[in-house]
Figure (cartoon, one colour):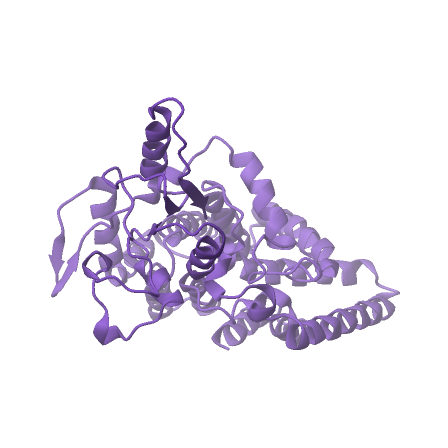
Length: 418
């Protein structure tokens, strides 16, 4: 709901047109991605709303020029840094770009930029300290009663410039169409309906033209805020090759702007047939919306697509164990639950008051006896091993074990990768 309010208000400030503002409100209400992103409690989905709020306050500063509004926008961007790890790179890149643009058009002074940066840094100080410990492998920092320490896994290795061009194209494609996960989008309706794509692409071109024209006319274009954020988000997300659409979730506030900019460009072009064009477009969207709503409320369901919500990411451990028991009859089952005990408890629920570390649990008929797989795990021809793809240590270890078995001995260790 906050996204709907801030997004609609932002478009009202930029276009200053009641009909375009109404179109923005309807777009936010009825487009599949905005509906579906509110359905799942993914932590990263917070970034879309956080950025919408932050950009709105920045636009209010650009309109009024008041220092307290600028500082408030800095606080909002600082809060946005808590929403998703990719924001650690996206927001700094965006703030540098928009600061230079505002400085060029004398919308801000250098001293105010420094104050703006200070407001961001103070708000996001715990995040900055966390990033410091992560990048430099520093010792845990004790800060205001909190202990800030690096996480066990470092995902900075995923960042690469080698396939930047291909990743940019892939991210553009999946954010405008659909990804492999039906929680983000479905192939029939795309993220924003297929009919929206031409207008979004046209809006991008118009925004680039407005940006270039602003240097010739010395006129500041508020829409450039969204262009710069789109560039920042696209660039950072492209550094980590992925088919996960939710990583770029905050880019959809930019698509909203591009869509409206493309519609306005078409209206400026169809001066005589403008009413007919808008009528046909409106009827087309009514049909798409009616079809999507019928599908969403009567067909689409997590239970129809997968047995469990977490099956979007992991195979169902309980189903694998049942399959092994029914088809293989192995005496021992080893389940790879290193660092993901929560997934096992999802399939085998217990009271939080009874929860103990897996390694300390006694044998249970409902839960596999063994939970940790590493190079010290004993391998037996009669046992079954449920292994995650990420556990390359154990996979390599088991391959070497099979290689050095005595000739002629039958070895039937089962590796189920999920």
